[in-house]
Length: 546
Image 1: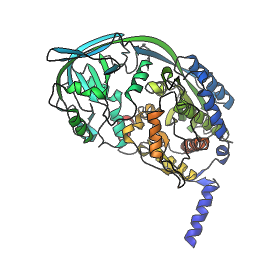
Image 2: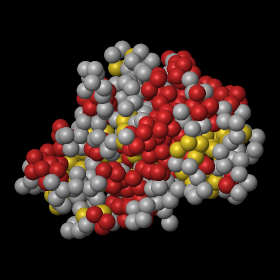
Image 3: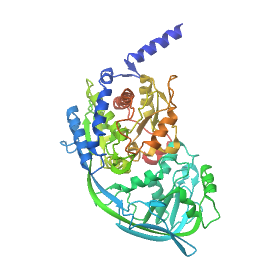
Image 4: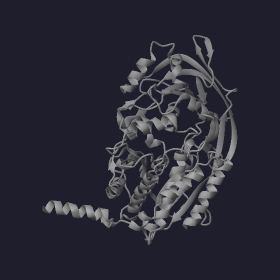
C-alpha cells in the first residue's frame, strides 16, 4: 500500500509539471506552444511562392526576410556586430556541364565510353573549372580506415597516383553512429587523399534504398555548393582529387569486368564486414567541366541572453536549415521542391521553441542562440560555416540541438535521440522524455546513416555535444499503420521530391511535442550548473572533443 501511494504521488508530481531532477518545469512556457503557429509558418515557407528556397534565389530571400521579422517580433537580440541577424555565408555554386564531361574505361587497350546520366554522374570540381585525369583503378572496399574498429580497407593496397573505387557505406559490424561517421564522403575523401589517390569512383550497395538513381540524377542537375574561406577557397574542395564520380550500381559490373571477382561476391563480403581491396586491371579517363556562380548565402542568428552573470557567456545553440532544392526536374508534373517537411517544419518548430523561451518570466542561466542556417541540403554548409566562424565574443558554445524533419505524421510516442549516448546530454533527454511520457528507442535504420546527415554533425566536428531527435515507430493499439514501413516509405516516395508539400497529413499536435521536447532539453542544459561533457572513452569525444 505504501509503495503504491508513493508511486501515485510521483506520477502526480510529473503530471502537474512542478519539479523534476532538481529543476522546475516551466509550465508557462510549455502552455505557450501553439500547433497552429507551426502550421502557419510551414504553410508560408512551403508555398509555391517561395519556389523551393534554394540558396541564392528570390524564394530563399523571401523566406529569410520572413524569419528575420519573426526574430524581431520575438525580441531576439541581433548577434552579428550587435545590430544584425544576418551572418553572410559566401558560397560557390558548381554545376557540371554533362555535355563537356565524360568517363571512359580502358580495358586491355580497348576504350569504352560511358553515358552521362545512365552509367554515371560527376561531382562539380570546386577548385578547377576544367579537370582531366587518366589513371588505373583500384578497389578499396568501403574505403574505410578505422583503427578504432580494427578495420582497414587500405591495409593491402597502394593507391598512390590511382583512382580508388569505393562502396558507399561502412561495415554493418560498426556501431550505428560510428558506422555513419565512416560513411561520410568527406571522411572517405580525406583518407583517399592522405594515401595519394587522385580520383574517386563510388557506387551504392544494391540494398541501399535511400534514394533512386533517377532522383540522384535529377538532384545533380541542380548543382551543388561549397562555402568559401577568406582566401576565396572552397571548403572541402579537395584539389587533389581530379575527378569524383558516382557510378550507377546497375552497371557496377563494368568496373570489375577485368578481374575474377563478381559483384555478388563483393556485396556479400561487404555485408559480412570483410576487408577487400585489389587492382581492377582497368584504367579510367575522367573529364569534368564545371560552371561556377558566386552566391551570397546567409544564416540568421538571434540571441536570448542568459540571466546568470557568469554562465551567460556559455551558449546553447538551436539550429534548423531553411534551404531546399528550389525548382528542378518535374516529378508528377510538379517542378517546385517545396520542402515542407524538409525543412519548413524544423524552422517552424524552432520559432516556437524561441517563443517558449520568450514566454519564461526569467531567461535561463546560459544564453540561447537561435540560428536558421543555409545550405544543409548541399553538405551542412551553413551550420559548418557558423560552427567554424561562431559570431560570439568571449563565449563558448556548450551544446547544440538541430531540428530537421523530425517526423510528425502521427502521434509521438517514442523518440530516437541521435547523439544522446555520446555525452551527458543523455541526462537532459531522460528528464524531458519522462516529463512528456515518451519512450527512447535505438536507431531503427543504421543503414540510413542519419547521424551525419543533419546540422548537429557540424557542431560535433567542433567538439560540441549535440543532439538530433526523430520520432520513433511506436504505435497505439488502435493504429492500423506500421510506422516502420510508412515512415521509411516516405523517404523513398516523397523525400527530396516536389511531393513534400503541405498536402501531406501532418499531425501538428505531434509537431508541438517536438517543440516541447527540444525546448525542455535545452532549458535543462541552460540551467545546469555543469556544462555538457563527452562520455569517457567516447569515439566522437576522443576524435573531436579535444
